[in-house]
Image: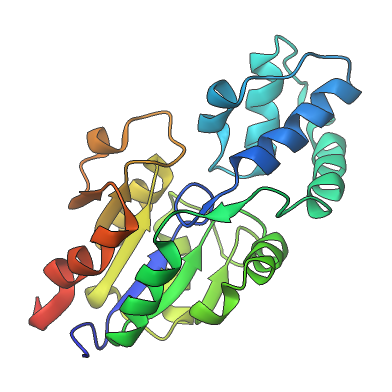
Length: 228
């Protein structure tokens, strides 16, 4: 089956491919505790994921009623990364059906990329730990692109790195950063309903909203298959 031959599909990582909330928020709460602040509930902090660790740290400390001066962010970021690197896949797992859906897309001829505001090294380490690196032609993190999502250049860089073209591209994500990048780049947009977002995915007007990865291959064919 090659219904997606020539298609290139870029995926957000945290909250789209992999449920990383426990490890990310666990590291954030470790950092808060180190600074003398109480932990944040997972449900409250979950939407802070998606714009990179610096953003999550800033939002986390703000939520803990301890807003950070700009000069304090970088040292905290470095401590966060050191800690998180050692706990990157303690509890993180691909969402149900994710791996099977990616394998199905590849079997239909699609080229796959990761387009994430996570650092590239951390992204590769996570994918390696979960035996998922084999599924992607390219992994483009926040340090491997001229500008991060929602800037369209991030998505464009990821699609090009996978060997694809924007006229046969889909962005699969969970949040406003993914929607913004796709719309600005002129790509089709699929959002998952189970990710990390401050704005409900449905309200971001995706071309297709899916509730489970079992729905993804058919959604991609509907958008790009058979010369669409």
